[in-house]
Amino acid sequence: MSFSFSGALEGPGEEWGASGSGQDRSGGGSGIPPDAQKILDTLGAHIAVVERSGRIAAVNRAWSRFADENAGLPEHTGVGTNYLDVCRRVEGRDVEDAGKSLAGLLAILDGSRPEFHLEYPCHSPTERRWFLLHASPVSGSPGWAVTAHLTITERRLAEEVVRRSVDELARSNEEHRRLAAQLEVIARSRKRAYEEVEAAYQQLKAAQSQLVQAEKRASLGQLVAGIAHEINNPLSFVTNNIHLLRREFKGLAELVAFYQAADETLAEHRPDLLAHLEEVKHRIELGFVVESLDGLMDRTGRGLMRIHSIVASLRNFARLDEADLKEVDLNEGIRATAGIVVGKVTDRGVELQLELAPLPPLPCYPGPINQVVLNLLTNAIDACPRGGKVVVRTCPFGNGVQIHVVDDGQGIGPEIRDRIFDPFFTTKPAGQGTGLGLSISHGIVESHGGRLEVESTPGKGSHFTVWLPRSSPPLQQHPG
Image 1 (cartoon, rainbow, N blue to C red):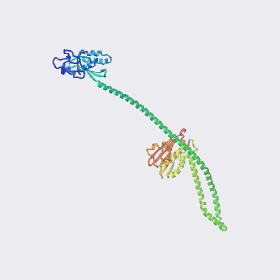
Image 2: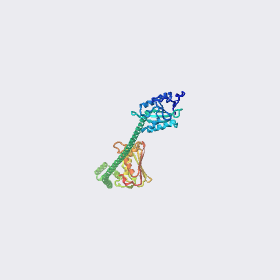
Image 3: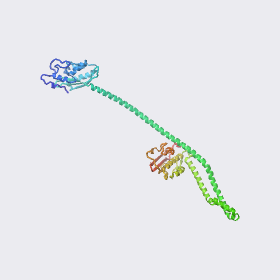
Image 4: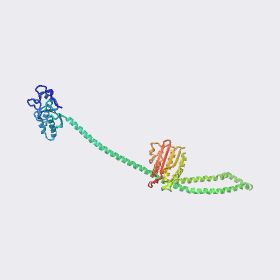
């Protein structure tokens, strides 16, 4: 880009450097053609025309006005001043910009550069200012240059505002990042704390369920011991009395037969006594008594045996004499447990069916396993409507056994299926369930190294499966 006054230099004999009187600081003179001076004076930039030697040949009014208002500044130079010398004499903080200006202007004057730009500060005592120096050669006049100083203060101030805003934004972003990092640390800490509280809560619930389980087992042991003690003594002497009555009744029946053989003799010799005997026989229904008393004692004996079986089932269920790990036939415990719930089955009008396949002996704690079966049976019976059916099935599998408890009751909805093994969770009405049966059962099965699973369809019933391995459960996990 070059500077040209071609439109103002059309007259003959007018060219750069023509002789004439010097030009003062406020413009005018014969340094350049008059028309060219008029053009320069209309421009708002501070403009100076510099000849090959560096001498200022012309300035415009904006240059002169700025020089008048800012004495001592580099622009305070008029026509005839050597612009290059001014740049060389600059000292202090402006030396670097002055050196760049000098080098750029020399390059324009010797034709090695087509143009030169430089932004530089020029602050006054009252305000901060910046300018853009643009230097270019004069078209058609080799060795001449035009320098234009444009004020860019508003742009630079705006840039400073933007820069401060950017810096402030960067600091704000950094603060936000720091706060975000702190919040993340707090969030992680809160999550860990929540997980620890949740774990502690689950441990507490498990401990509570184990305490309740231990209390129930202790109460059950005391109850069974009391029942066994209170029933066995009268049961023993009642059973003995029945045996004695049966033996004595045979003699009495034989005696009655002999008395009846004497009816003809009494009729002949004591008809009054015979009439009295006939009245008594009719009143006591002697024939019926003789015929039915033996069957009555048989039924009484069977009832006593039933009482004995119930007591034995209670003892077998609680396993008061089997607190240690031992190998047992699980079918035996299941039969005993089924005997415990016969009354509940009858009251509910439910059919209970046992399908027990032969099982290998299994090392376990018999009492807790019986408790698992009881809990599953009780829940299955409660879930069935009148006329429903509960099936308990056993079978060997791999290196262990399976216990299946299947009912055709109301089933379990998918929305609560994952919660049924949680301690204290129950769907039964208040007062009808503690919510510990399945939780305790789950813990007992796991302590034996097994697992308790459920399949259920709402409205069609549930199928609980207990998987127990033959490997012995660890002693420290004794569930009792």
